[in-house]
Image (cartoon, rainbow, N blue to C red; front, top):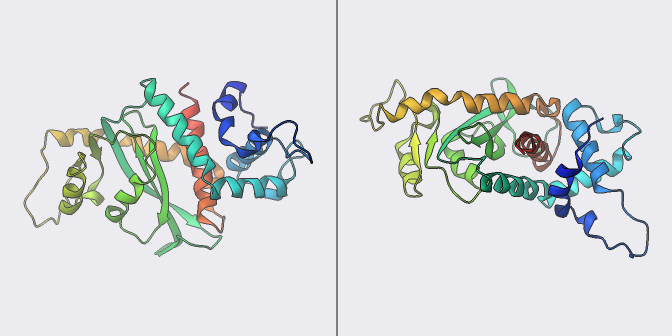
Length: 257
């Protein structure tokens, strides 16, 4: 059984519309949001089908329907944003040096935001993490899009107000156009040049030493993919799979309190 502590639940309960219903309202009361949330965490960790929920949790149809509503109304995204900003105020998150990368996941449930690759239909999970490997942005996209074109979309899911001072990526982010675009926003892109690059080098070798710490973003992907539900996207709607990814990030941030 997956359970939240009382302190963790009090931090996030205000975001759920079911918790805002007045006590004296007529009619049947909805299933408590905490029970539904913990049932979704069980699905996330085990990767099981919805109808396999244990009897200690609410009915699987109720849990699935409520989870879809939360994903459509971006409740989980607002929860993750609030927790991230609280950690930043406490000095846990540090956006001075951030790392960006993407990883692939299989997509067998059909739906939108899926791209063909040599290994079948897949999607990309894009992430930006801080210098401690904690998530600052996470999003999902079709796998047939180049990562350079997804960087700005990744910032649409950025959780805190302050943008990173230095953004470090691998050779896939070697793009003079991307460097100029981010420079206008006050972000310095650091990425090693490709071996077949024709244009003159633009990166400073001393700043490229930061690239040695890029394992932090790889470790983040290892953390979230330990959640079995994220290994394969079975959800037809992309926002539902993104909701599971956001929940995995939330569990990582909860450990920092």
